[in-house]
Length: 337
Image (cartoon, rainbow, N blue to C red):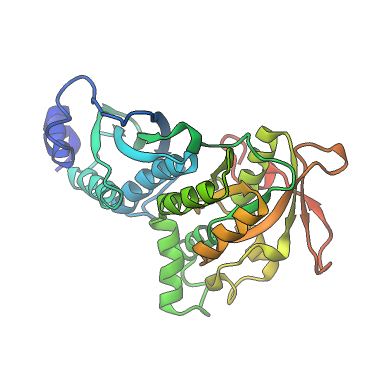
């Protein structure tokens, strides 16, 4: 059965099953927020052949990734999710089964974080697009922002980077990589198809914020790549950074088939890992890394080296490779690569 056979209203009746009946049905969703909380709103768009393809991503995985991308943005602001709306563009020839599986994947992700689908829109489109707007709430003093990095802050990552890029490579070239076990392959592929937004980090972070009496929290998510996240924070905070290449943890599943240089390239520029990058005073950063474990690490320091604001220097303490200045051109950028 195709979407054009049942029309907009027929499809809506199917998709309304994924939404709370007491919220949908009007021209807008009404979400109650707690007192003394700020509302956080974020939007992310996924386009067929740009963000996903039938070669690498099932409809359930498209749904999961679409939901996870938005929840990751909420986590990056320190916000607890309240709900999402879904804007869906579909060719009429799209199968209804594909759309239902898309929503099943969204729901599988959202249910883990008690987040409902509270509305949306459906339109005819020459290509499949999934536009999600997510709503969350955060106490003003706990809001994470990109422009709050201070000199000598430690730069923390909450987990491994490069695994999603590794999983994509396995999906695109399954016969070229033979020295990995099936379990190792599955871990990397799952990192690409079913990334987890790091909302689980927030309660741990708030405990550390309170115990260290922190007034500013700086950070963002690293879904566009670790190098991109560092550069964005430095630009917003008008500071520089020195990153220690040997302190960036490389995922164990990449070591058997990538050189250290290739694995580092994946970690810096691969993208879609959905970890958080945080800048904190060193005592708080060390405590956070110790509590998180599993790929969390302090990878560098906020600086203002030689007066060069925004400059991010990648330093190799082993001196096997020369220092380099990170830039955005090597990662994915819409319209340029």
